[in-house]
Length: 170
Image 1 (tube, rainbow, N blue to C red):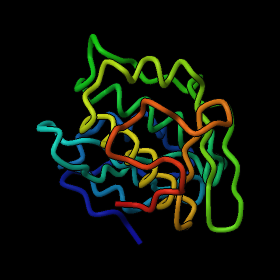
Image 2 (cartoon, helix red, strand yellow):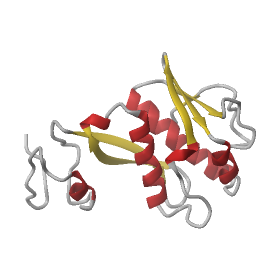
Image 3 (tube, helix red, strand yellow):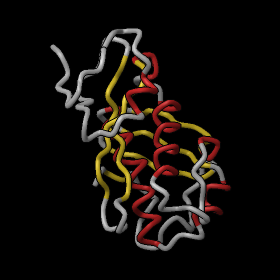
Image 4 (cartoon, rainbow, N blue to C red):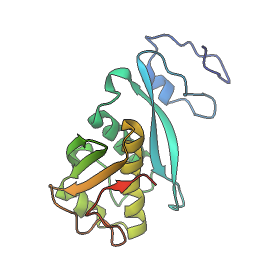
């Protein structure tokens, strides 16, 4: 099956994935990936910070199912939105650990994540947290994500969110 394209691009297993990422999505249907590629759905805040939208991106098949690769791609994409410039730069080093337990992923952040998130209002913090939650639940076909900071219940990641319990995708 050939990808539907607005203009022809050679597609071989050796094709440079970085080149695909640089092509505007309006010209390229990336729902097609070769055997060495995997289409990943990332959930990112819209420009008006009212809700999340789904962005498709391609990662290598070898990285499919690896939480560190998926979270690294999400952090990069959050930074590329430019919604958080001069306030917070998302780093993969914010993540202490990711553990899959039954139908739940435990996502443990560092205290630096909690400190850096303090510059955001509660609504934006909620969108950022749900960027992580929705991306992980979609990528791993699980039901919920439990958020922790250094293994403890976070105290300042959102006044209107009860982080004592796992959160479902929204």
